[in-house]
Amino acid sequence: MNSMNSGPDTTNNPPATAAPATANNAVAATATAITNIASLVTNDPSLGDGSPLGLIQDAAVVIDGDRVVWIGETSKAPATDNRFDAGGRAVVPGFVDSHSHLVFAGDRTAEFNARMSGQPYAAGGIRTTVAATRAATDEELEANVTRYLREALRQGTTTFETKSGYGLTVEDEARALRIAARHTDEVTYLGAHIVSPDHADDPAGYVDLVTGEMLDACAPHARWIDVFCEKGAFDGDQAREILTAGKARGLHPRIHANQLSHGPGVRLAVELDAASADHCTHLTQADVDALASGNTVATLLPGAEFSTRAEWPDARRLLDAGVTVALSTDCNPGSSFTSSVPFCVALAVRDMGMTPDEALWSATAGGAAALRRTDVGRLTPGARADLVLLDAPSHVHLAYRPGVPLVAAVWRRGERVV
Ligand code: NIG
Ligand code: FE
Image 1 (spheres, rainbow, N blue to C red):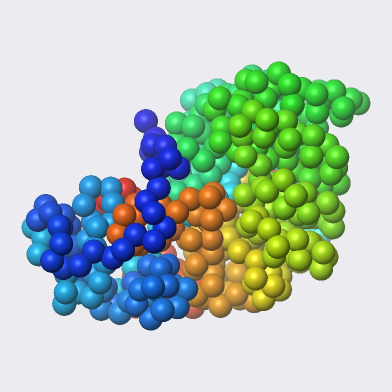
Image 2 (cartoon, rainbow, N blue to C red):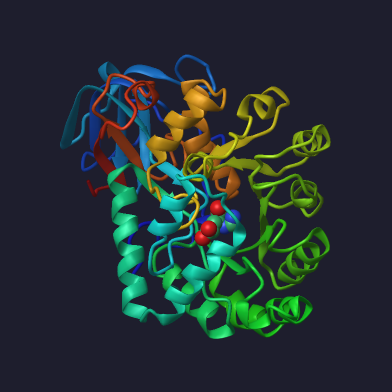
């Protein structure tokens, strides 16, 4: 039973240009109207102020079942049996966290502590979590996923992606994906997180395993395939081989690219039409140009730079080049142990050159684009009724009031869950 994002929504998307309903057409009386919204982010530029956020003041949203059925000004809202008064506060689409690593056990407090005393972050720390994850029972892994998802939901995340990558054996990777798939359709096979410690002297043999028996066991449970393309993990040729094998099995690529150093990951992502190149911290002009010319979203993960004391990705440079940017948490015990999209929004505004409007768009519609979804990350008729009510007059407060728990209520698939 999926707890956050069940159902094959990817095959059931509404048309991206669904026309707004009007007060007079069919809105069932049994629907619920959320009224008196001071500022509503729709992410539909044809609505409201015409900006990319499609901001409507004094707005109402009507939801019926799991869908939005009407959007407009409160004064024009159709009559419904159920009303919820937003009390002059802001409503935004539920956050779409398109990058997390939630199937793990243990933590890496000591490693974080050492880093804050000057030690650098390196891919090798992943081995600590691999050992703890292999030693954990299914129940322990399930309890961890549930706990971090609950945490994320309380902070407004209504859609999320998560991956394997801390098992690195056929059985442990397949187990991680089975557990992840109970909670989301956006499941990613990351057998190529690092070369398994069992194959330390035989990386080519590990690539054979990842593209062979492990892929066979994992493909039925996943939608996506990912590789950590980085020094200490997998080089460009290995990444191409792994992602191409995944594509042949019907998995779509996304890549951990250019996180710790310059490298081939971003250009490979565009070449393979990956949905997303994630991290994008160290970019050449050729990388930026490639992203601007392709369909690959640049997913920025500021929790990782925060928690590894690394240089910030330059969101401004990407946006000015016309690249589609998503913002996500990268929630994992090593490089970014936060489940909070609002925290990432605040960092992106303060340190990565994003405006509050751009950061909000990237954390909602941008995340949806990184998952190639049009049914989430927006509030328009036909979209999924995933809404966040903020204890604030506008979304700008997510950056203006960093660290403050502003999420007052959450509806997911039309159901009030927070
Ligand atoms: O996205 N970079 C690779 N994977 C994770 C970190 C994993 C870990 O350190 O456990 C990331 O940052
Ligand atoms: Fe990651």
